Length: 370
Image 1 (cartoon, rainbow, N blue to C red):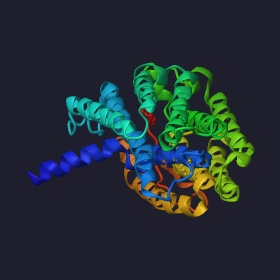
Image 2 (spheres, rainbow, N blue to C red):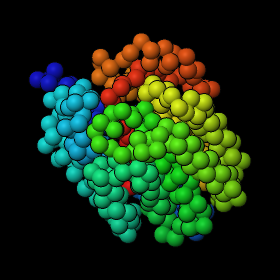
Image 3 (cartoon, rainbow, N blue to C red):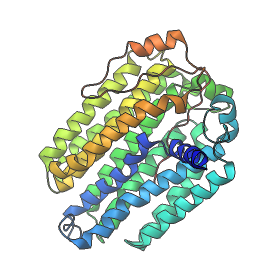
């Protein structure tokens, strides 16, 4: 009995992707931090009245993220059985029915906690869940539109966090940062497609690198990322509390992002799966720093560091232990791909896992929260 329970828990844990789990809640809190400059949002971290809205700003995006993983794995179960048989559903460790039930329950839980803070934000939850299903079933195999919807869903998370923390959010600050995360996550999602061109093509997924090639896809992702960082830099005067802390963390995020894109741009015509996955691993860490930068702008660098720092460490450690096994079957590695991965240096201040390539692995990027 104990062994069966442990195996079941392990299957759910792998479905959650712990290395990504901190991100949606941090983006929700970043939106709440932007609301600190509004008349009804300035009490954050100063009294018990702010506790429930902040908890909701973190919990609902996280629950929606979990729902997206469960439902996305359910929709992808047939193709995963071919290219990624080690995953919980095709390996038989998690039944399709259980995945659907857990996904629906997580979505309902996100809606329930939303009512505790601002029932009007239920529209965002409903729209996000519709977007998650549309992404999983249709859009992620339809060129740039799939990458764009990925960014839209994260932009909604910023708006959601602001709406839960304040009855009257400062939209002049919230909207620009929603655009930052829209462009940023569209770029990150597009990087995820670079490692799976052959698998996407064989599976009928018409991603941008399948349609236009690696060079166009890599440069498009880089331009989207540069646009996100540029809008964030221009928005320094809009942060309500600590523009210096915001700017410092934004610079750190930009350095990590620049390193990630240098990996794929310098070999844009011959990006291996290992190289593209390596770049995306860096972006998984970088986006936590970006969310922390926005939190610093609203609540100060001290609060942002205390929240983001431990979560960044957990994300890096779990990514190093779990991600290769989740992305690639045990026999998918090749000596050549491993050699390429071994030549890639670690970004400053981080220690990320080295991964072997899969010539058949299809893109399965993280779906986004509300």
